[in-house]
Image (cartoon, rainbow, N blue to C red; front, top):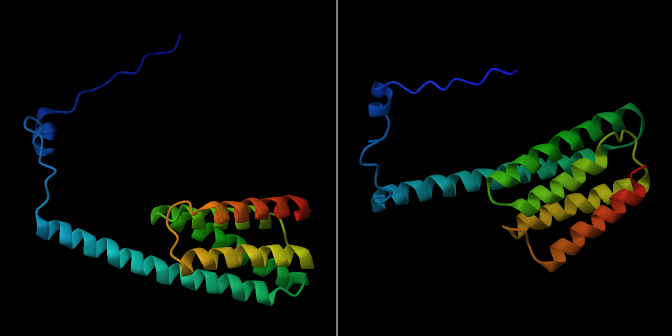
Length: 162
């Protein structure tokens, strides 16, 4: 018979150090605090945009350098790694469509070391889609066109993965 877990209540002193646990706390922020928070978010978003732009450039360079052999493996590793980084970044900054396209790219290139010409075209199309999302700053899930493009890339990826 499994032993039941024992829950140990925190000491009273710890409760007192937390936000006033009896009265709670106000969620009303002063206008100055709101303004500072908005500036922080704006700066973080600007940094995000610059960082993603740099990563997209890295993807384009890596794609352009694939020439077969050992170099292809190295550049494909870079594409896998960079697409994974973009995938994680998109979710943090309310760009789920960027995350979806980066995931599509990352899934497609998994285990791929020496892509064929058609596979390179699909990789290029996925990178182009990432550029469009960032160039147009498409936050949210996008619209019908973006959804259709994502579906079309998924079909192409399934067809030409191996």
